[in-house]
Length: 292
Image 1 (cartoon, rainbow, N blue to C red):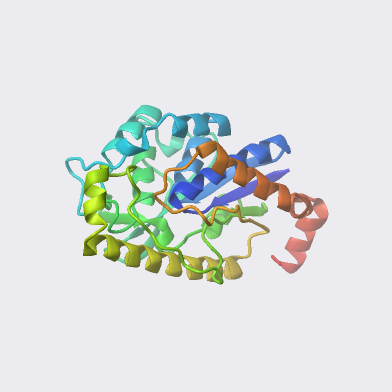
Image 2 (cartoon, rainbow, N blue to C red):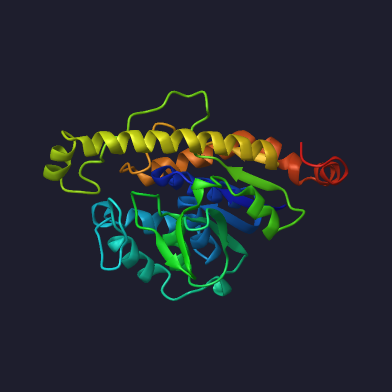
């Protein structure tokens, strides 16, 4: 039962990917390749590097989220930095490259110089992670190979097209974390005290910066929802999983085990559809008639 995965972005919501991976393993599915965007790219790289879902959960649970987003030398213009994230990458990925992965994997980013999507599948893994999670304006862009790279969700929130390139002919399971288009927008607040000290956050909350951040993140939310919808309609993954993570904001501090369980629960709901997609009848129908 071979499949390819397309793991969508969503910040803290992305811990749901852990549960999806865990349940797929329990059900006997063989993940032959992974394409990921943003946090989905991070999780995908860790899994492709040989970390089990439980090991990935343990890595995230061991991190003090308050220490992740300080500025470091070399960071570009941004509200938050990647100092703690870089230290984490050095610890768990070191100098490993895509050539060291046990299964094919690629993550998406966007070059803001040319305005094009970039699929990263060569070079150092930690560089690719920093590029794919670089939410514009919030985190610093990544300078790489002449590109100025930001979060891949700007153009490809759920990289089904990349998953199909990695494993032509295999059914694609797409994990979508953004809200559906008909769901009301939520208000974004500066997370306290996850990313900055409480005293600073409380002052920011009273000035226009916090209000501007709220408007910016809501605008990103709107565009991401729409882009996800249109690309999924066009690229038609065989199975779509939508964990119930819509109450979680991108930068929220979460109980990782609880969010991971939401991913496992969501996969449970689509198991009949997934079993049909990987059956010989389902694969024959795809060859004859194309994706549904």
